Each structure stands twice: as structure tokens, then as C-alpha cells.
Length: 133
Image (cartoon, rainbow, N blue to C red):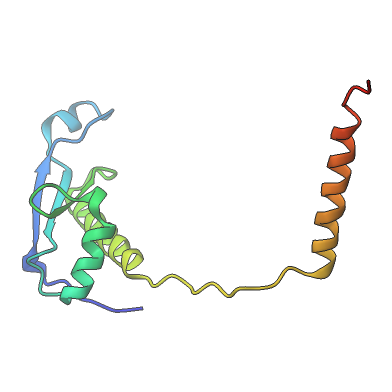
């Protein structure tokens, strides 16, 4: 797995009011945080990695190529900011993970035999439904 460090100056934070229940606190404070991070302008990844990330993170991106992540779980703006960064790192690590190579295996003799027997049994059941004459 590749390790990476995104410079803090690449992050752009925007605060908004949280949605949902919370009464007066929700109405008065901007505790929800939106993290904007531009993949194409990032210094943290090679061109090959950027291409791979761009393909895998389409659902998180807007038209300008920015990855958008929103957090409003906490009442604290700082905690929501930290959660956004954690989410981004988690998403990036999963997107860069190499899938395991599949090792082809032959079916066992018993599984082949069972398959053929099941096919014969099904055939007999269906043949028994036919009208004679």
C-alpha cells in the first residue's frame, strides 16, 4: 500500500449550518464543514495515481475536479474538520488499494459429479411433467 501526505495548504474548508435537529444551536452556529480538495492540482500524487483516483472518485467530485466531503456529525466545527480530513484519507487509501489477484482453481471431481447428478435429477423432474400421448 502506498503512503502519502497531503500538504495542509491544499485543503479548503467551508462552514455551513448543520441540518436536522438541534434547536437553537443549529440555527445560530455554522458547525458543519465542507472540505474541498483539488485532485488535479495536488502535489501528493504522481500522474498515474491521479488518473486512478480521478476514475475511482467520480462520485465525490464536482465539475471543477474538486473532491467534496461534508461532515456535520459533531457540534464542534473543529471535530467536523478533523472528520472531513479522516474521511478523505480513508477514501484515498481505499481507492489506491490494489485488488488481490484471483487464483484460478479447478472444480473438484465431487463437485463436477454433484453438478451432473443435479442436472439429471432436474431433467427427470421436468420430463415427468410432459403429457404422454
